[in-house]
Image (cartoon, rainbow, N blue to C red; front, side):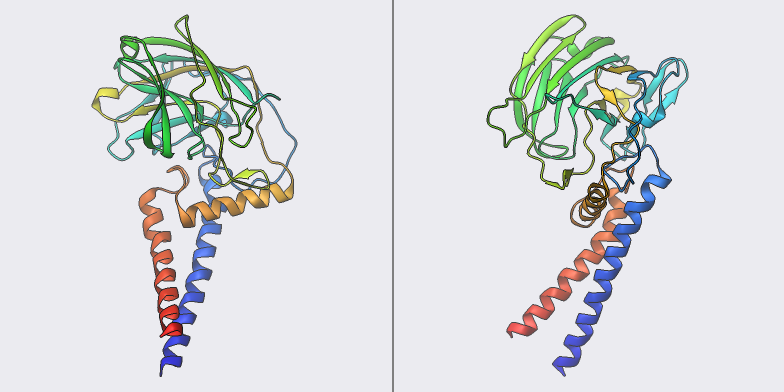
Length: 314
């Protein structure tokens, strides 16, 4: 009797594994077709690298949409003669607007310039590097100054790496910010991450930053896409109307960051693993959809394995 039950559970387990693999593969493949502005290290056949202007003037409409990777339910809306404006949302508390495909130079340094119109006079952040992991770095502009957070994982603060006081920073309506950030691997003891930046002409610096501890498969990070520029705002009435007006980079921006076939395959597998084991940005798969479509299958697999192990040891 038990053998029949065990066989049935094993059959269900195989079906669930096949279904989960198919679901993750389908989402990984079709997500960039549905939303081309979402880049999270998805499958990308290698083509020649094409660079384009690093100047993105959102205010007058002179920008290349291929640079943009909005997240947070696309709560950044383009308004002609204004820029990309953050609108109120009750779905996503923190809304990132990433600039994708920025290539660090040979010393892993990235130089970016931003113009922000902070009419609501709310807190916001400038992205130094964002990869949905503990290696992320950003400057959070608040009323008391500039905060550099430590992360337990993406979106969850684990204290602060550094704080630079600047009274009324978030009360300044027009902010012209330039960042020079040197990214360093946590496995390179000779390299220390460095940041220098100017805020409306005032200069600041810090070496208290998160090192890059990303685990990669064939050079493709398991955390998904890595972005070396962008801003973030907090949704709500108080921050409704924050505007991203202008961005430029001293680095090369490529329309395609694909490498060889092995790298592309590793990227595809990495995204599948993220969908199954954790999550990906909302622009690819909303959290609720992940819970309903993916995590229910994962739960079923865990239950089947537990039943089979209990039978084998019982």
